[in-house]
Image (cartoon, rainbow, N blue to C red; front, side, top):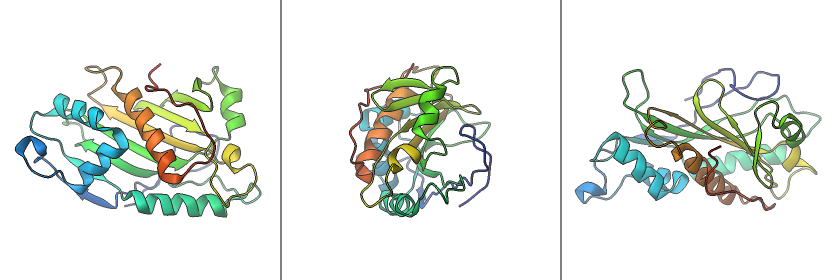
Length: 222
């Protein structure tokens, strides 16, 4: 499913945000009931971390939580293709944002939810470091910069990710961006979003095979 919207962060330009939910399922029947977790919940546990998913479950319901996820393999292939096709001269600042995992049900009546997304950033690393901290970007580790989302409660994280077969300087001019948005959870567990963002960043870097090391702390909570 694709939809166009303005980005809550990034430099000027219109972004094409693609909520790429390649497979969805309701998973009220977690291992609490002695059953095998759904493929979607397994992806969320890999992307968010087992302990963090368990925390979300405990905050929303004692018997499991609804999960939706994208397909990590397709995400890897698509982002790799985009990075290898990218050049600074042809960059039009249009990006696809992929929804990798959503826990809970979004909506006004929802007791809470959390969503993790991945994309190539419209910001360069030079722009991020130049804006920090006056524009809201905070250095959380060597090569890791964090900013609160502007239109939702959550965090955006930008870091260089060099892929094999890409143009020179790709990792700094086309850095990786992950974001975690949530509703109804942070007040009850203030460090949750930062821990999920950290785990999601590590997972995505491993999935893509980023060749440059960065220092990702256990939590990105300010």
